[in-house]
Amino acid sequence: MVTYQLLLGALGLLCGIGVAAGVFALVASLGMVPRMAGKTSVAAYVPALENGLIAGGIFGCVLAVFPELPFPVGTWFLGVYGLASGVFSGCLSVALAEVLNVFPVLFRRMGIKTGLEILITFFAFGKVAGGLVYFFCVAR
Image (cartoon, rainbow, N blue to C red; front, side):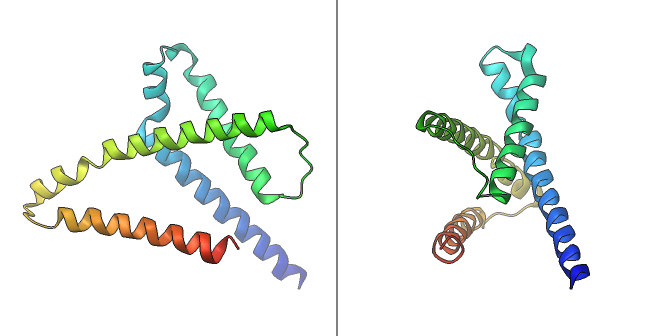
């Protein structure tokens, strides 16, 4: 039984590391940090921005894994956290919208004349279905 629990713990840790690596690889491949540094004229601080992104990811993972961990902060922290989360989500969505321009080029090079609208529509349906499953089944 102890071996089984240790195996499940190791498997969960490895899967979490894999998901986190995938998220950070997505952020890195979209070029969010250099783009934001260029737009805000703080290009000299890119390593500090990347370290902050990694520290925020680790901090969020620790709070997600240990939800009962006492973390006494005031409402000001929740406001700052909400603002930072909103900025991150907005930047990620804009970066993904720029990446979606890959599909028309790919379809044109592959010679596909129809189907782009259907593909984008099913992407949207998948996102909506995933959100509904999460909010109504998982996050109860």
